[in-house]
Length: 632
Image (cartoon, rainbow, N blue to C red; front, side):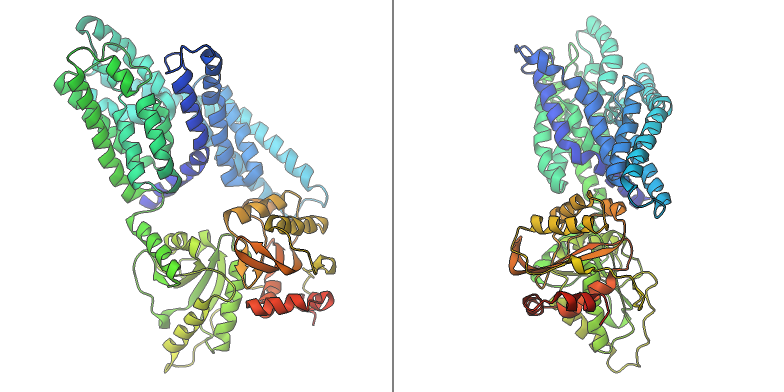
């Protein structure tokens, strides 16, 4: 159950966090230029304020839907997700963030399933037509479905939450209102709750008693402040670095919406603001706190301005208690259930990164040791599982075979698909944390490059020593899907015109583009695949050591591959590839495993810097064509 909650939280994070900049922009504009904002009386403020509502109603939900669709169905899924989200937006005047989180992934899923069904059935030359019309038709249908089904369903959900808050208020269960208020706020119902429920009731109370605690139930900035400060302490990466600025906007600017994405990325942390607000309401009730009128926006300044004489101690303490309780609980929840995994997984990531800097192997998250004599499966894992891991696996497999170790299966996978029955995972040091989470039972061996890593010899020697004195090892079972058979009638994957020798030095981006252009010209891929190759380089370098780079696309653009093909280009003077030298560039477009034989042969002739340098210096196109295609 815990793993499912974390997975769900990571998926929500994947939709919301890439768009956090847009949330911050909206929060700043709203805080400054709404009529009650800090610059609300400035001349042009009214014109600038006209952006606030469209950003909240249209821009932010569509961005979330687009991102969610892309996560599931690639670029086409993103467009379909955005179209479906627009339908939900058009169905109601309510803010459709929940609708976007449903419509986006739904659009991506529909496109993904359509592409799977059409795989191999689209006539050559009609790919672009089919792709464009499929997105338009599926997206249009989903937009109509959203207007009549998804949008109204989301409205029902929000109405139920609002009714629940009203019932608690009417039955004098004030502290418990936070149980519904905080989740409802995260669904962007904060203004509806505050002005639609609490303000009318609180106004009537204030006319009689001179103040009302109801004005502080939703507007109290303490719970949100505590959550954001917890992210400053226990968050990671982008969330940690952005939480400080968000805390200032939320507490001083009164834009509570700024912390909602931080809850959505880890839904369980809603307990922090929830319990913090319960504590704050209890403190206010005990000390007689309250405001003379609604605080809008809900900033600390607005709260103090609306505090009656003699009420500052109670109100400030109520805000402070809410913030402290929210901070403590949120910090505990982030450290225990944070999106990057539990405490043990986080420790494994730190240990793996530390060991990687020293070139050492480390045990996985469980801390369990792996005996060398028990090793039956070693997995090489890279970001896509297409090129670098395949070459590393081939190299280690050959080394083990030469050393007489034949009872170990060496295979390659994407880091996100590491099988659970492996004992050792070899991966790039930047991926070691993800590998430890995916394979907690395995020992993680972080490396700095997949070609000629010194850890290979260490592993081979370890496996050989463990088998000394034992019986002859039995051959490991052959991987069913990860080994490509070498047959005489195998298709030619490297065509002569795609062996380009003696290229002048260029930038890595230019080299990748040249590979991509040859792939398009040869009918291997659609033109959009080139951008996927560039995106791969931005997220994870394709320079793998031994003066070799293997440009290939991300998983998102794999549907753009028409047929498997390989490009080979030599750069005698070398390319400065982000600090690495590259002389041999091997572009890959792979629908399946057909390219592995070519990569295996490249390993055989370019396993060290010296091998690659000699190969490039004396390269012969005809000999390379025959050798890499297995024709000689």
